[in-house]
Length: 133
Image (tube, rainbow, N blue to C red; front, side):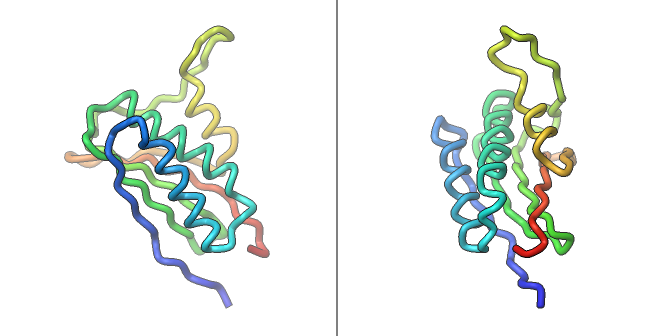
């Protein structure tokens, strides 16, 4: 029988602690759900998405949602109040100090994307969960 988990939500202020707080939140949720196989990838993905919200928006808070989809997927969602600051996959040069975040997300997730509403946007990324988890 499939175990259902309710989505878990955390709001963090747009401060230097946002990415570490988001990372700890996601890891704690996934540990509670027994999904140890995706901990490292989830921590990396949420760090990149929150860092993008920090760098490219002026949103006062960032909302993080962790969902388990019925298709053996964990969806990480990062929501900010800047619908016009659209994420873009870039190619960073060898000496660039930024610009690799979404490339990392793209490489380790099953997929990612962004949905825009007039008042906010959410960036989501899906991680595949082992069938036996």
